[in-house]
Image (cartoon, rainbow, N blue to C red; front, side, top):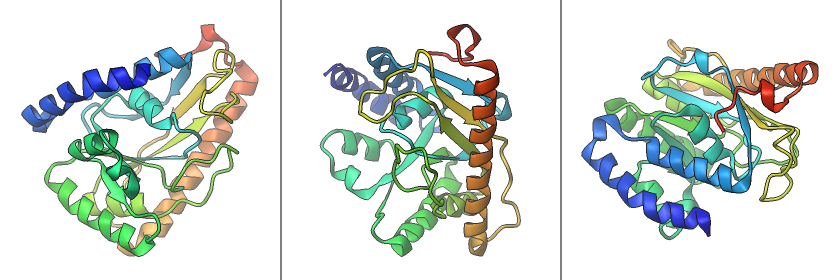
Length: 244
């Protein structure tokens, strides 16, 4: 209920300012909504690697997907104007789907891989005219078992088509993510690890699977190094780099 109230209050202002300031779209309202979700849910997070990002530069962020809360988590962590690649059926959801469409999010039909890649190519053409950072979960959906599936090539198609650098992002935690309400983040905060951006200059559409595979391997390396760091140093509240 609290999330719905916050959405109703913030969404109209966000849409209005997004229309008025198209060249500098506000990210504050989506960040504020996400902050509200995490505060009301008692969820804590930790951010690593933000120094890898250049302020104002646009990227294609590719992340593993672990929970429904990952969208709010990445709004909090990235703190910039971003659009998400979402499943096509979400566009039809009353209010939330309409709002996402007005904000310029990209919708793909997951049941049609060929059509999905065509959608990405068209989206890349549009983004080239007005670059905006994009977040995509290349696994296609979330998996709470923490096993990372193969990355589909849609994000690579966007990166190659726009020339934006790819940023691997890892979401990792030992908290209980089995239910909608995440538990145990005081001891084990959700960890967002931002990897080093890499260029796809010289790559073509035919290289999309190689780029996807490279990104998945980078995400797995981030999780592996993050797990080692947590085991060595612990994730106590006094050691967090979190902003929540």
